[in-house]
Amino acid sequence: MISPPDITSAEFSKFQKLIYEIAGISMADTKKVLLVGRLSKRLRHYNLSSFSEYYRIVTSSANPQERQLMVDLLTTNETYFFRESKHFDFLKKIAAAHPPTRAFNVWSAAASTGEEIYTICMVLADVMGVDGNWTVTGSDINLSVLKTAEAGHYILDRTRGLPPDYLRKYCLKGVREQEGTFKIDKRLRDHTRFLQVNLNTQLPELGPFDVIFLRNVMIYFDQETKRKVVERLARKLRPGGHFIVGHSETLNNINEELRPIEPTIYRKP
Image (tube, rainbow, N blue to C red; front, side):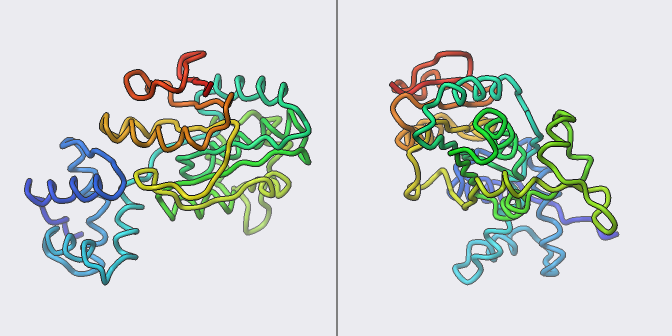
């Protein structure tokens, strides 16, 4: 196998600046090996001998699809069902107290491959009914993970974190050529919608939402980007709505409007 070309410090710096400009992601110097590993296949695809040549392609106005593919390759992150389960215990509690006459709307703002979205769906189906008045919007900058999320079709190895009773209740196991996979029940998928959203730019017309999940994505942003992203999203939250971040994240010194009510859970007055 041909080894990937080395990336110079100057080349890596260009990609750091580019992914920051596009997505607001601060790529640490320690991520150089990750970038080389994920983008080398694209250099091979074009038969290129340097990362500078690939940089010219992704910064050319003639290649928006390759630019998006680069973003997809550099923004894929691990997720799994019921990750940080205390958040879903909290969701269950507020959904149970929600007035049934008004829709309960949730936004998973960094949805990745969809495990967070369908965890939310399972909780809401349990509390409010599978035919209840609730919706879940999933968004991501990464188009390839959004396709996976929208399909709701996973290999059985991805059941990590998923309680067996939920697997039986809300998932369909594949048979014959689909053996070894499972698909999220259409009754849950019918409550969802998916769209590409770049949190680093002006947001589309969405909301208002009762709950916004923005978990395990701010760790990739610098302080100023965090502030702007949270400010944009907070505008999409109903008064009295809740904003949930990852267990390693905080809104301290980032946003003064949202009030902490539990660690990593905030409320809009």
